[in-house]
Image (cartoon, rainbow, N blue to C red):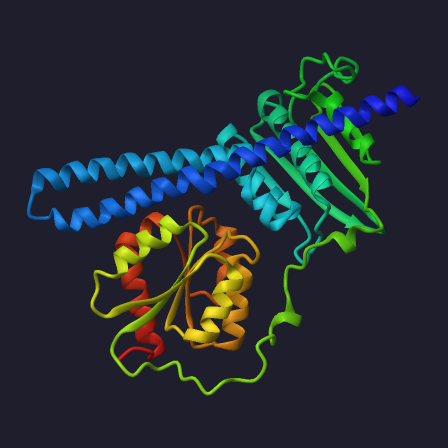
Length: 381
């Protein structure tokens, strides 16, 4: 019994170690390679404007820009395959919704049902292993069920989390799949899913028969301390951190639109500054490398607009946007990100941003978005 327990714990730790390494590599891709590619597109965008009088040079620059766009698309795919950012940023329920859409890549339509009011945030080890288990079950279904359809249902009540993955496909012989050598197993296999659920204190039940489909159920007792480990999705207690309104006015005395750039990558800030410096009605008044600095500088400089990255240390762009807008509702916030996923866009808009755009789109769109938002707010002459 002790040997089984130790082996199970070791297998779980090896699994988590793989996921940590996937996350590390995905972070490296996001924090370095993708930012370099974005900067390359920003610089090329500037060059394209200067080369309009030289058709051959303009054509070459466009072709190079297209290559960088393809490279960015590919790195986003790699990051999603290695460690989906949505799982880390928004938790298991949103991660499962994303997984349902992602599985179209494997020619399977997945219907995901989760509680609408859900605010369940599990410890990282549980989140990772549950997500991985559901993904493997869906991949199994796409390979063997033969229907191209599956459902995922998540529910939690009375201290128990339950996830059901179901298809109405060909089914299989449970006895053949009851060992690690079962032919229907994916990379880790059904045996591995059962072992990792046991290691978490949960259970994995499988029901299948030839021609009657397959239903897999993951159950997990929620840890009593889970609430203490939750990250809070909405932060009402932080809405009034700035104290009473100051006497500063959002209207500037001149025609320039005052812009604050916020990004944890200096080279991206420099690239964005070089883009905006080319316009006479824009003035970049400051830079910040994280959300905390952004909040402080907005309080000091009172910019017309803030160009806000999302993924940053100390305080992310979503929280920083919420804090800024609660104190200075007239301040325009425009979100930027290498990966402008739907979930991030919704979160930024809920925090008060006018929109979220990809960083590579900044060359052609950022100036117009800032000016249009300033006109609507009446903050520029």
